[in-house]
Length: 54
Image 1 (tube, rainbow, N blue to C red):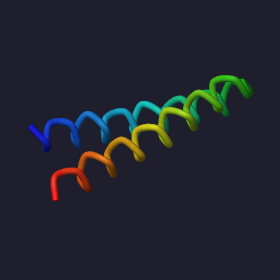
Image 2: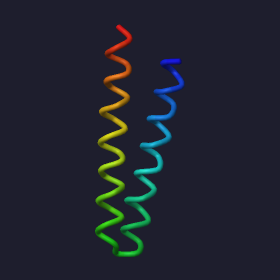
Image 3: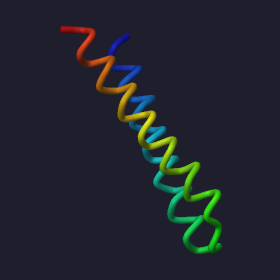
């Protein structure tokens, strides 16, 4: 189960990176901010899942 949550966090990071890239292409600072928030949240969640398992 822990690995499924880590995979979901990795997919969320990919989604956030796509949001940043697409926001840059469209010159949309709001989309870039949402992408960064998704990436930071997913990384924090993934780290907490991994640390909780130890």
